[in-house]
Length: 155
Image (cartoon, rainbow, N blue to C red; front, side):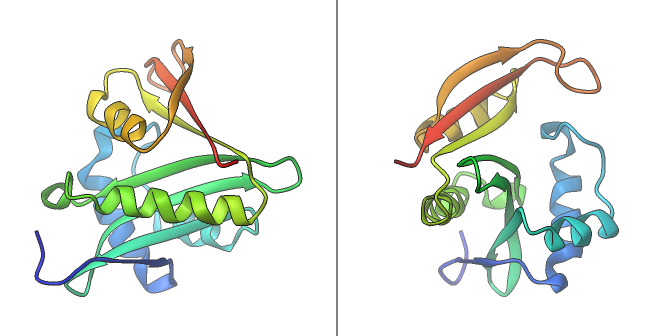
């Protein structure tokens, strides 16, 4: 996997280009097209959005975002991306675990994620991380792809 144990930390502005590269490597998994640096930096400045990254061997290996509504106790996880060569090594699960813990601390009880219905690896990943099926959303993406909505309750 890596020479050192990956660390999971909060996003800094210096991480923006790495997030864009990782997102581009995994574009088929995302609802939206390529990200711009401006979009990443503007999202990170929102008070209702948080990014975290996983860092391995001094480089950003993955990222995870969450849009949350503290006042109503709900959140939507995503986007999430990992360098292809580091997928299936537990790093993404560590990010999800840390983000869910943060959501619980913030008083968010209900966290959803949207996954393309054909993305069986992502569906399994989220099920392995405690999410359960909630809804099947037909022609949900801009391209008309079906999406599963999965949910995790923090309390």
